[in-house]
Length: 393
Ligand SMILES: Nc1nc2c(ncn2[C@@H]2O[C@H](COP(=O)(O)OP(=O)(O)OP(=O)(O)O)[C@@H](O)[C@H]2O)c(=O)[nH]1
Image 1 (spheres, rainbow, N blue to C red):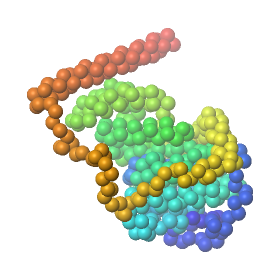
Image 2: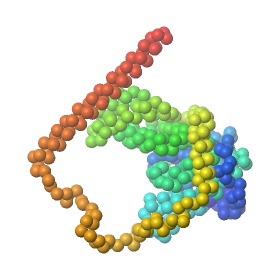
Image 3: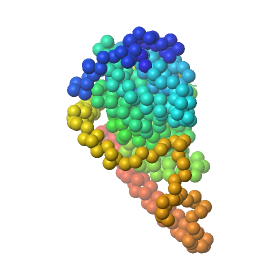
Image 4: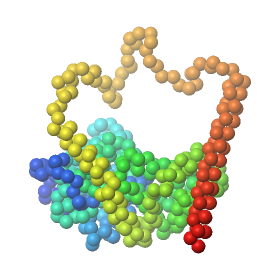
């Protein structure tokens, strides 16, 4: 991790190391600052986050002078100059070796280690704001779940959002999303992140130089167009996907998307406009929530550590990882794991088949009535829109 001067991991500036930072200035006592605005770039592996980040830096340079953070410990090199690079703080390969972890465990642990420096990290971001950086762009690890479903990802996101305006940009690969099932998986992920982070959320439909993103926008606005696309795909998850697509309808209504090409730069002018709208949304709707959270955290920080005195009651530590040994049998009721093939067969084959058959029928009926209800709702929505248009004309 570094201080002032932009650098890449290849040419680290040793001036102003993070450990030299005086922490007195950083405090939850302060309210949420106006800048830098933190932009967290998320997306599935290979969606183009890093290329997107590079292009965003270029397009925002003149107006917002972005401060840039790379949080991917496993990337070989980044095509931009990062002010803070997790690879300068944690050597992910060394972490794997030391803790005998696989690649994903190594990335999670590296991010956890970085998070222990969170106060210093936010202090650097704050100082960057004071030096005139209006934006702070944060590139995240390739494996999205490492950031979105880890404690450290949570700490970083909430930590930033309680100190600076913060928004999420979700990068989605248009080419890969041409497959309706992949599109749905991507949307489910986006939806879960939206509800988890509770921050303004923008979807950047990336790689439009390869494929126009109009079809995605059609799928999001017209359920039947998406159903038609699904019909053409022979997949065992179709039924699930169809059900999900109905459920996600409400989510789409409030979702802002913007087509871009991180490679050619097409669409970035519009994207910047959407991002500014997201910042305004943070100020209007989210800031009060995070302000409240900040005050809660502050109160927790000031409260005496109540549990410390009773630590003996906390239980017995369980050995983790490689030193686990077979537990001794303490009584006849000891817990055991059972593989599906070892489950005792209580029903004979005919009974099982019959039961499954009727279950299948009920499921199909339920599904059909679910679809029917939704279709009628969609139809009445369309009729209403048509009536409105007729009244206008
Ligand atoms: N044609 C085209 N290719 C792109 C675009 N954006 C990214 N790519 C390519 O997509 C591939 C993945 O891009 P990255 O930027 O490494 O994606 P990432 O999400 O950061 O990848 P990980 O961090 O490894 O998950 C690279 O080959 C890029 O050149 C784009 O807009 N158009």
